[in-house]
Length: 502
Image (cartoon, rainbow, N blue to C red):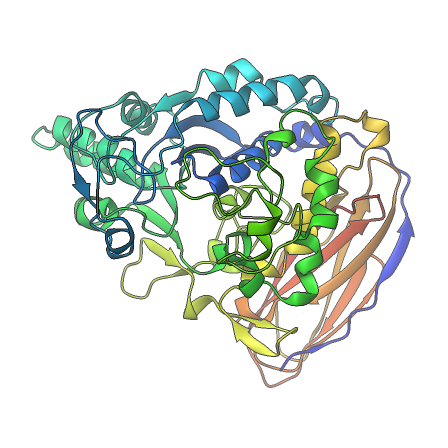
């Protein structure tokens, strides 16, 4: 076990720095993304948080799709039975299922438009209300897994996959993959029997990255995987529960306060029209489309199938890891999902090199339970993520001077270093805060993502750390420099140092 000696260094940093200006100076290229969503309660809550982070990525499209849990029906009374065993058993034959309608996505974007004038006081990178509204499309929604026809949503995804921008396009799957599958099928139908097919296939596989939260229909396994095996897929089937209905089971009890009503109440109430639409336990707001509302009344919240909850407790944002993966907080996870970040940690499959997964290969050591934990690669970040959410909630209603903003953290020594056994490596960062807040800095070893198994000694003091390596071990170590301000809702940013010992 690696020995970790982490000393917390404090420093009063008074440099005022605009986050927007910082990005412009760094010429940061934002990741492009399209969100596909079935409009479930937890999709609504994820969507609201996603909008508060819309300055961190380039939203290319917002597409309503169906899933095994939510579909509209064709309006003709056609009966349908799920291909997925769980929903087949629960619901049997249906003509529609728990459909929340399509208006909700417009209502949320319109509510975003109401707080937009305040959000841009904190970051000029927020897209306008009209920009987002123009990117809403309705995809394949009639039934679970329906991909037989082109829709405005599938046509929009197809257009983006074939455009001249060759940068990665992250396709977030919050429901079923069927609208994405339809877009790919349309591309295949158009080009497969032409001389351009190989070039088009390579172009799409180079661009598309699917981040899927479970399989919520069968279209990935039945169509996408067999026909587009080289498309990158990030598949989250375990870690997302940290932010989903089972969170009380997945999250260590010591971290529950970050998701309980006392904390969440500060975020969701009295923070403007967007957060007023956020669903929470006992809020008196029945979710749209639900057959049985087990959330909005306190009586049902206390005696719920997911656990016993108090008023304003977090319900679910099971899809949030898909966009949190795109938020650049300094962990470099966008370059490699296996090294961990706010969207969890996904490891490349040994048998399917285009697929990254969580599960046994991505377990992290949970210090609260003293065990390896399939969810801890996500839950370890909960305090930082939730405080960040709370700070951004304030951006909806407060001026710049009366809200918190994240520290700016830079490496002043190389992020990637080669070293020999027996050497001592020095790492250093600079940190400033746009609000002039006091900063706390710590360095720690992310053991699970490295290959080094020796007893290295890490000592930190302020913004500098030294790593002393024993003489008989090789491998890689990941050192995280973590900087947190002392604002009312503390915000945290990072730098990652990778030491290759050989």
